[in-house]
Length: 176
Ligand code: MN
Image (spheres, rainbow, N blue to C red):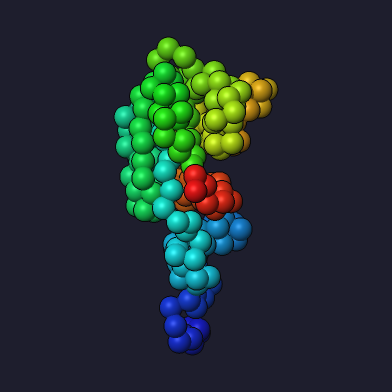
C-alpha cells in the first residue's frame, strides 16, 4: 500500500528514499540531506557566507572539479598549480581555507603545508590535504605536516562539500 503523501516537500517515504539513495546507510543519507534537500532547512541554512578557498593542485581535472563545486556554493576560488605559487597566494591573499594536493611539481604539498603551519601569518588557515594515495597515504606524514584534514581522491561530492563547509562554518569573520 502506498503511503499517504504529507503536504510539503520535506516528507519522503522509505521507498522514495531507497530509490534515491539505493542501499546507502542511513547516516550517509542524512549527510546528503543536509546539503541538498529542503527537509532540514536546505542548503541556505547550512551554507556559510561567501568565503575564499585556495586550491593548490596540478591535476587540471581535480582542480576544475573542486573549483566548480566551490563556486556552485558561492565561494571565490584561487588556484595554484604548484607549491611555490600556492605559498605566494596563501601569504598574499590569506584565504579562508586551502585544499592542498600532495604530489605537486617541485615542493610537495606536505612540505608546503608544513611551511604555512610554521608561519604566524598563515598557521590559522585550515588546510585539507588531498591525494590519490587514498588509504595508502602515510598517516604519520600527514599528521606531521600539520594539516587539518585529509581527503582521498577521487572525492565523493557530498562529502567534499560537507567537509569544506565544516571548516568554513567555524571560521569567525576575519580581517576586519
Ligand atoms: Mn598532483
